[in-house]
Image 1: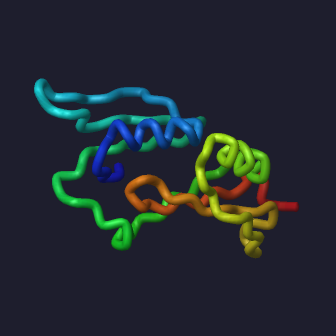
Image 2: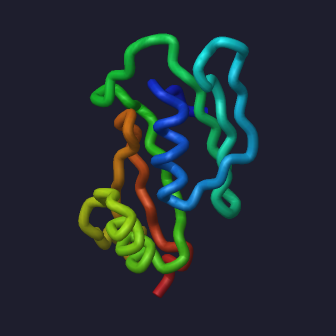
Length: 116
């Protein structure tokens, strides 16, 4: 579960990564407070933070896997998102890239098939 400043804005951003909304909660007279998202086998919950977000202090890194990470990165670019360049560290021989969400959380995306 990640604390975010605006659950609706985060829902729109994560939808562009391919996540779908499973459940949401909006108390009467208040903004959207909570959402449960899913993309394949990955589940993510977002909750509205009660304090200001500090992107420089996000101590959580989300590692995601995509089948065909190169093509997925290209698709994200076509969606208007800004993934960083592909890198090829020893543990991710087919590549991985970084993308930050609207609240500064780091998502690293590697290929599901890492062995050559």
